[in-house]
Image (cartoon, rainbow, N blue to C red; front, side):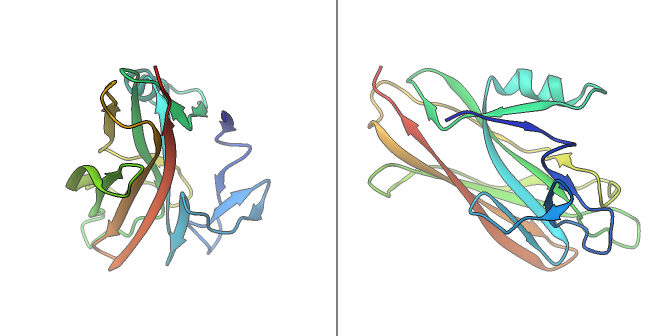
Length: 176
């Protein structure tokens, strides 16, 4: 399944007291497995093809369109990224946010993990601005990996706000 997301028109962060809550066409959306907000800090886990091109597109001044993926073939690189908003700055104006990535095989066993990665440890962006995490997870499944549905889980932490929550999504590894 391919989903096209125009960041400014479909997924917006409200510039109201409810910073970090996900909005669609001005209406608050309910949390989902891949997209949540806690105490004004929101995060959305997405999977995209061509991770390097995605980062390049994100850094352009134009509003990016994001094409997410839900299936991959062996040897096809793809990336897991976190879009976030509403991190809490410390007294110096700096956020302290981290992410752990865990990938699980179709049988539920651990495939890969990356712990304590920098989600954002810089000056806080405006709360209504959607940011791309510093850390990402690039994967390339091999032809020897079992076909089926894999789960990607990201544990999100805003250490300044004492907030921790999980977001997760799945992808299917198809036969070559």
